[in-house]
Amino acid sequence: MIILAATPIGNLGDASRRLVEALESATVIAAEDTRTTQRLLAGLGVVNRPRLIALHDHNEKERAGELVALAREQDILVLSDAGMPTVSDPGYGLVAAAAAAGVAVSVIPGPSAVLAALAVSGLPTDRFTFEGFLPRKPGDRRAALRALATERRTMVFFESATRVAASLTDIAAALGAERRVALCRELTKLYEEVVRGTAASLAEWAADGVRGELVLVVEGAPAAQISFPDAVTQVLELVRTGTRLKDAAGEVSGHTGHSSRELYQAALAVKN
Image (cartoon, rainbow, N blue to C red; front, top):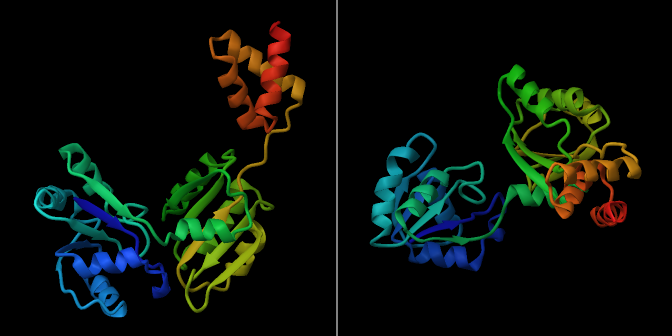
């Protein structure tokens, strides 16, 4: 089978026992960077020296078939440089190919920069979306942010230190200067830091330069200011177009902030 294994995002102490055992027994490892994997083996005191196969963004499409065929004969451990493979890292193409070929895929869960940043951000964690890296080009980045202007879920972005000030400036322009943001830097490492504030204040803070690996957690858009009676009217309009009452109440609740249960009951009373 193919086994996806999460590796530490900074602190080697976060390596799970299952990860160490898997590294000690692996015969083949598909790694984003084989040099990083060699350092990981040394850092964890693993003496096993498995066959290392490079699997990165530039060769995954070509190498996936070879690895899927090999996985029919033996287990293949898949590692990214840090965190979980496939999450803004190589591995998705391989998993898709394995699933299509009927080859089993398993996982050894562990560290995740996305979840770590979300947890310490101080922003709502009940619903969130991971947006990966924002586009490099300013025009494309601004267009991507404008498309997210009404996204109500908390948003998580990866960003480079060289672009973060510009990205924060664009976030303030597209989403609002007062939109709350948490900038998480060097998570689990010696100089770990979480800076919280508005998009505008963090853009100013970052203007002089920021170092390290960064994750931005951005507050979702506030609920539209729609009165409860108007929201009930929206539910009834959806019902008239063929939407089930329960589904209509849930949809309207999602963009107004009113209770789905209360909308359902109010609309039901009107119908009856």
